Length: 128
Image (cartoon, rainbow, N blue to C red; front, top):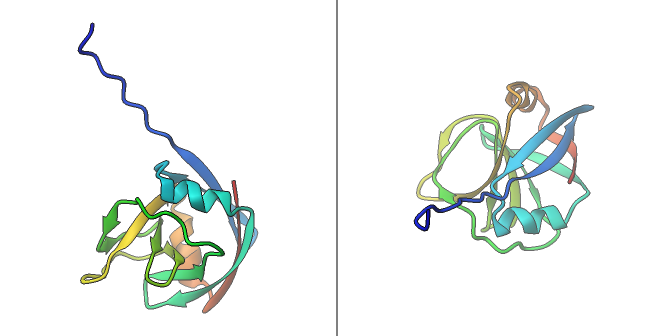
């Protein structure tokens, strides 16, 4: 049929290790996610920021074409352009008037619990 359309979504994966456990981050395939993937592998010293996330500065400033949100959710990864940081989220929060850009999601429910129970600083390894 001439009117049939094929929708292709480019989904990439990142692996992240926290306290010796491996998790998989499924990204949307945006230019933002691809730019972050190009920086990997990386070891990041992340710090707790507020009561919902850990953040770490990225080594380069990615192209930010990600979907902007002001309500963040647990088990999701975001990018905050204002500080050029990757954000690992472990609690739901309304951050308006600010917004972050969606990078991807972790499909393991223990991810948020590990982050919640961690100290204020966390070393993580991220790779393709």
